[in-house]
Length: 311
Image: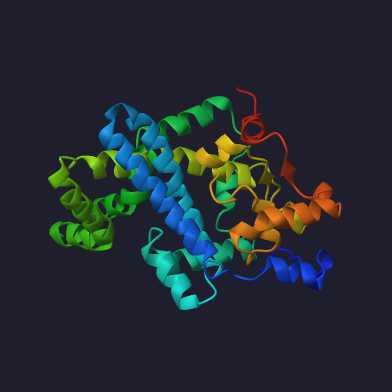
């Protein structure tokens, strides 16, 4: 299997520059995790006090749920904290869970980025698509169909393929075991909020964003990162796309520097908070002209990804 071409940092950075970029901070990653939870809790409090703000809260919280996923992604690269035990504990318990399984899968993506063995190649292969196709996908995202398929698709498949006469209860119990952390989190959150008359907070202010807006922006992020990039692309500066993002885009759909995805693939062990500086240094050296960068933002990427005409 041919691995994707790699980038040597010494090709683009001096030893002093790399020494400034590469260290893992003992507090910056943890501060970003704390920031994500602070925004979620503050937004939840806003929605409880003023229920009219619930639609806005769904969007903000869904964005920070993606933010937690981005920080778990940093933990998968060992970039969230210099102590690997702290890194893995925070990545597993404070950003969503499933770190070990995700790490194995995701590092495979980096090893074979845009090559035939890339486990994420299916996310970018269909593009460009039609606007109608993207609209259908986003409707499925917003109505919870995508989330249900991702979360319970395996469970449905096990039920459908069980042997004649095989009891259903063990399959259900196994699914409960697999989802126990998610279920217990909901029970705990509901129990804590119930005395304040906000028993509905978890399903409305956590589950609803997770099932709807989070799915939409995850799709848009995936499109921006790798859509319309050629399979077997040989240039390591063009395995992923960096998308320019303004303040609103960073708040709502591109948290914690996730838009610097080309730089991330070039130097995958850099902490996310080092990526903007890496981008500025590369720009000053004239390197960004050869990188895959979309200066027009996410709307331009979506236009590119939906440029296939309707037949």
